[in-house]
Length: 221
Picture 1 (cartoon, helix red, strand yellow):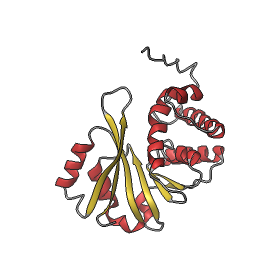
Picture 2 (cartoon, one colour):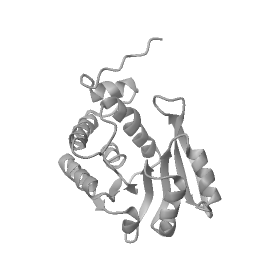
Picture 3 (spheres, one colour):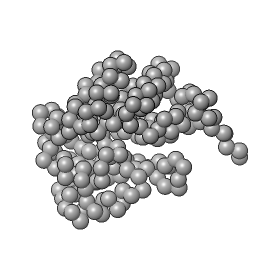
């Protein structure tokens, strides 16, 4: 079988990239996601918000990862995107799942202000917390924290160890190093009293490896 050639970034479209990955979305969502891409790429010329600056990378990495988060969240849940960076997964998830109550957290001021403006331009009801997620967890509660490309597992678990009463589970996307990170976390005692489960795996584009979605929550829940 001859694989379909990927158009150059200059000639590609979001709809074409979605088709290549067999992803079917309502037209209104495609238009909103296309608008998001153009906004974040425009901001990216001034700030380092993302390394995924074409439709193929956006769909194969950002959108695919966000869809995996979406599959394990139920309607009405309150979720916090930890270290949203350029708005993934939070903004993308807000477009795909308007039934969720999504909050973004970003500790780097310039990124937080840029993403807040992107949210305003997209007219999404998504609040932005300028600061560390732990600060927000001291006064608000969430069903789940979403983490992608933020820090090693042991460091994440140490950050949020004092905040478990403010959220029910930690959902983390990791690459092939997740097994080693799990071992390091166990050796450091960061998983004491917690259960870690692999919820899903999917191919990591351009490699022979896989991405994984991990769930961490207190034992017995």
